[in-house]
Length: 194
Image 1 (tube, rainbow, N blue to C red):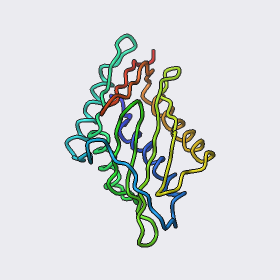
Image 2 (image 1 turned 45 degrees about the vertical axis):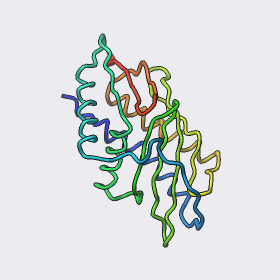
Image 3 (image 1 turned 135 degrees about the vertical axis):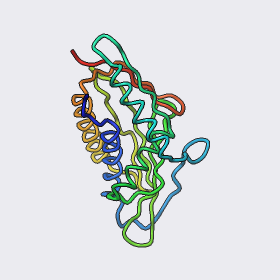
Image 4 (image 1 turned 90 degrees about the vertical axis):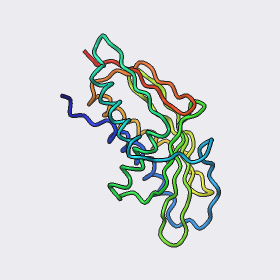
């Protein structure tokens, strides 16, 4: 049995995005409204987080060097996993995380508890593609309250996330062959390396 834990690694990727936003947003005193998921808030549940973990482990078992396996991740599942992990660790001052897939992009929002009485909404918009068997993420936009992150910080955030993802894929011995971000879900297809 493989001891790799992809859901925790996935949460690490999202947490890195949030931590970067925290480093830039502390001390801000203004706030803009950040758009939420289409269709309203995504409910978080332990059941949805557990379903994602179970589906991931089943996909790992099905993947061989000659057989592709796919993983379907829904808005509810990824939001639930991130929310549960954030609440269990308590290390990141983010509440009401929302993660959703739409129009080929990944959106992440949440309310960051800053020092003082003001909380700021954060927004991160990213894309993901497959490049030589790896999932590669590109952060397109990052905002904390009314402030956009500098381009150099967005580039640094992108690099950090991709380094973590490379480690995740290597640890799982996977070659990703296809990734699609659809309305409300992301599909990842891959095989085990020989």
